[in-house]
Amino acid sequence: MIHQYKNNGYNIVLDVNSGSVHVVDDMVYDIIGLYENNTLEQITDALKDRYSVQDINEAYEEIGELKEAGQLFTEDIYEPYIDNFKDRPTVVKALCLHIAHDCNLACKYCFAEEGEYHGRRALMSFEVGKKALDFLVANSGSRRNLEVDFFGGEPTMNFEVVKQLVEYGRSIEEANNKKFRFTLTTNGILLNDEILDFANKEMSNIVLSIDGRKEINDLMRPTRNNHGSSYDIIMPKFKKVAESRNQMNYYVRGTFTHNNLDFSKDVLHLADEGFEQISVEPVVAQPTDSYAIREEDIPFLCEQYDILAKEIIKRKKAGKGFNFFHFMIDINGGPCVAKRLSGCGSGCEYLAVTPWGDFYPCHQFVGNEDFLMGNVDDGIVRPDIRDMFKNSNVYSKEKCKNCFAKFYCSGGCAANSYNFHGNINDAYDVGCELQKKRIECAIMIRAAMAEEE
Image (tube, rainbow, N blue to C red):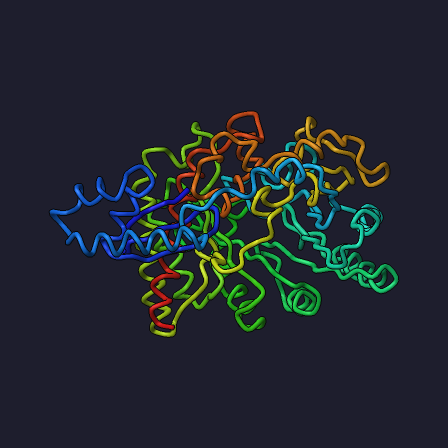
């Protein structure tokens, strides 16, 4: 399978199964489009008015050499492997600890219903968190590096327990031959020097929630009872975080909605404010929500990605670049086969833990009792749910099988698929279209920057 597209003056050909990317001239681009279903004579007849016969013959021969070398029109080596893939042993390698089901913001698009997750407000106790870390160690097999994200609601509302759990985690690392990589996701309202000092010592990554321009951020991320601008409160703090971590091992994470379809301005606003690690993602909302992304918004949003991609190239070439997470792909290496086929590992390698110790496949399933997998006292009591997620992959999803993006997005988000279609093996269509555009832009950026190397 190949995918051909034109972007920013580049003719790009992606060989999906090998991951090879080719930037070609117009003639080669046209020949590749005809190559599989036509003979050389038919191709020559179709293109002879635009290109010389000799050039067509030479290009055709070169395309054949690339095919022989496994860089064009390659066979899918992964689908025959899928039965063995389903039988792979899995271990838990990451937990999302819902340290607080409470929040000091009232974000309008919050899937957690202002931190409550369809239920009661609660703070995780040290005892529950300790059991969760013990579960992770006991169920991680021989894997040494383990991931723990302190999540909410707003985790800094329960920061004493965060500190206690980090201390406990560190205390059991050596005896169990494990290494915890802790992450803190915060809206920044309670962020202070004490929290920052601790986070800089113990947190491998910090995720900072902000949507971009002040008017956009404050529209969707208001303080409770309208106690001032959340943007004004958090922006100075977030700048301090970024500088204190030398512009590494953090990122500002925003959400764009129907209210700011010109989201490229929000990304560039954050870059202009000095942030070098940026993620701004489309909201996932039901069509009835006023701020939901609609199908008719997609062409405009694709133009926004093009604008952003061109600006990133311009800034990188000027030595003022920044990382936009949706444009960061590894063409040369890429993720392992398991991740390419199945994605984030939710439900089998990654679990969310509620304040009272229940296990769910990920944070977006929390509160849906159909996906309650177990708890910190009893472990996994619904292995059928785990197996359902384990067996979900790009070949179990009809919409993914013949999609050029499948090895980059790995089938997309299971929660989004379920929320829109009631099935984790479907796909969120609006999200798919935007994902494909992001991948095209990301490859184009790599092609443009390769000219500088």
